[in-house]
Amino acid sequence: MKITINSEEFEFKGKTIEDLLNQKKIVNLKGIALAINENVIPKHDWKSYFLKPEDEVLIIKPVQGG
Image (cartoon, rainbow, N blue to C red):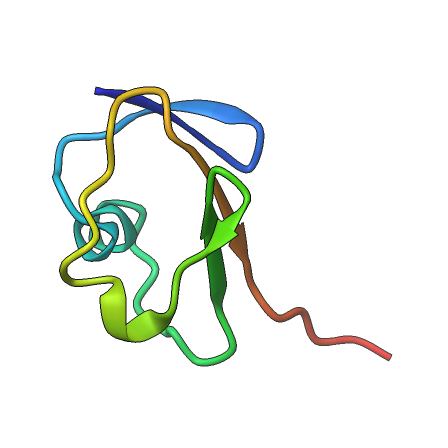
């Protein structure tokens, strides 16, 4: 199914947010926030939240710098 991640179209081959993070190879989840269609999804729901076609996903990762 097609979804949008951080304003870019993406072909998603899974079902849950956890599947998405695995497909994108995002393994360090410390400090990551995630919203679906402008609604923040708590980390404890990532294993059970099912994505739908055309969902808009925003993944926010911490950036080091100074």
